[in-house]
Image 1 (tube, helix red, strand yellow):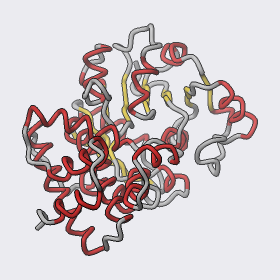
Image 2 (tube, one colour):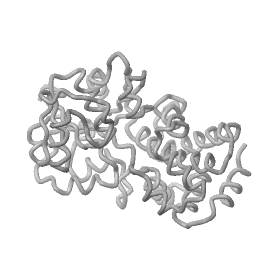
Image 3 (spheres, helix red, strand yellow):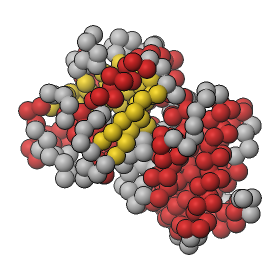
Image 4 (cartoon, helix red, strand yellow):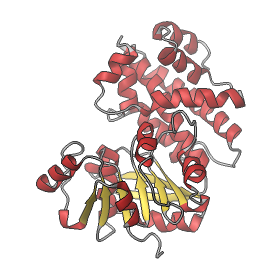
Amino acid sequence: MNFPGKIAIMGGGSWATALAKIVLENQDSINWYMRRTEQIEDFKRMKHNPSYLSSIYFDINKIRFFSDINEIIRESDTLIFATPSPFLKQHLEKVSISLKDKFIVSAIKGIVPDENMLIADYFTQYYEVPENSIAIIGGPCHAEEISFERLSYLTLACRDIEKARILSEIFKNSYLKSSCCEDVEGIEYASVLKNVYSIVAGICHGMKYGDNFQAVFICNAIEEMRNFVHAVHGLARDITDSAYLGDLLVTAYSRFSRNRTFGTMIGKGYSVRTAQLEMEMIAEGYYGTKCIHEINEKYQVNMPILDALYQILYERKSPVAVIKQLSDTFK
């Protein structure tokens, strides 16, 4: 394969749409998988995604759409997955052909529920994709700001650093800069945890905690992230790099953050279920909280913020009481 070869976008949501826009600025054409044929037909007719980031218009002649996941895998070399983590297994259960000779890029900022596995580990264990043939896209970056072409940054992580460098060239243009590293596990875990902490930031915002508190909260959150990531994967890393701290900051503060929005609703008094029903998109941190909580039963890292959110989301404890108790531990 002439790496990266033919590139496929796997997913029809906002992040998949933003990534398609980016890739098409550096590639002549792409393949694009969407589960629903009606979404594809509407896309072709309207020349934009009818459901997400509809301000981005595409040259339809540069896109080959697929609703059959096996067909697009057969016709592609590099697969960029940008589906919500709770739906990944559902999509992959339809796969009947080998992925071993494909290059997998995960833009999924989540963890596989039930399995409690990182996306890269899931592809390696269940689909025999070599570790050197998997890359992770890290932030900080919101799809909405890509659509507005606001200056943004990405990190490409791969154990084969040369492949990361080649991929990074595809994710560079006048409004996007990218860097590369080898910390696949660290960036994946950080991307899960930043969603968790962003829900808590939203809860506190909904409860009228101010900027002073949020600053202290972020300091405690990044320390908790550092302790956990180092415990599960002790690679030397600077947790203040943008792929870790930067991604946490943008997700905790941005109005585009669905995790912050979800948390804000809970902080204002919505039940967890009601907040989920009113959200138009999935808040990955809801699932990530349970997964990391269960993973940490093995590592026993002190994680008071994670534990507090688990109590609110899964034990239905009062956010007011839990956050008050949590805030008393901050320094």
